[in-house]
Length: 341
Image (cartoon, rainbow, N blue to C red; front, top):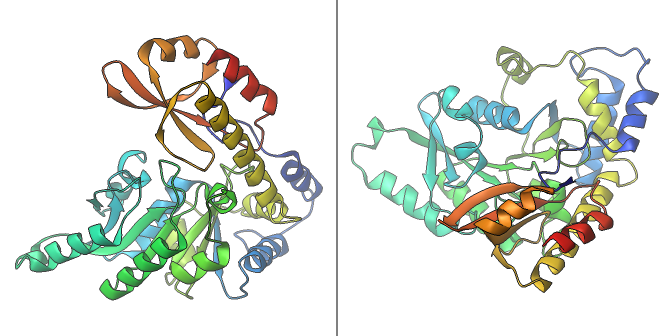
């Protein structure tokens, strides 16, 4: 059975596993107060061209989103997201469970535009009873988006400026950050992201790690008593080394970027094969997620030999299905998929 189900269906890249094995019997303090965690932070700072980033290691994307949003917002505030944002539809109400509402704006190819943010904020301020409503307290975006699309540097710069105008921290979900950075259409790098957003995370779970995300505060703006807040929410790892050692490996010899580049190369090959067969794309993605329009009959035929996601039904007989590539995707698997298409 071929699998293009997601980018975390394999375990971890062998270099990550080897580093965990090499450090396995080293005795280290807990809760992130260890030399391996310090080394991982140093390497991430270096990759970002900085030496002052505040970094924390967590285990998963939903956990990270909930922690950032719930510790940044005041009790009466909510987070602004595109209506296709991961925090809206794919996190089982984790944000709302923390006591904060997700305030949605219409998406443009999965993205928040300055125009839609302006419209939302102007409508909020025009309401003379806005003190009785949930107050907008921050903006959430993802890069790449849920549809595999990317913010350009110009778009992110404009959005960052709009957030500053309204006094809203800008938070970027980077679950698939590597694929955004290595996309042939990318014009943002880590240095740009550090300058333009207030906090973001570099995803490891979907880019070659067993688990783990590196949460980064870019403006010396980590919430006060963050360790205590993380522990209160059940997310403090005694063995934080399990995550930080993986990032130490990922940010040694550009492994993170090499793995991301491989997935992108495979996705572009897959895209080429799909188009050559006459299929249409639901969204023109240049990242590791490719959304292909198929008939119900073809979908059922493919299911006999291929694992994939049904992303959305476009009508009664037509669906957009998602093929995702990863560090482990092979050219041979794409050639097999081509035959089935």
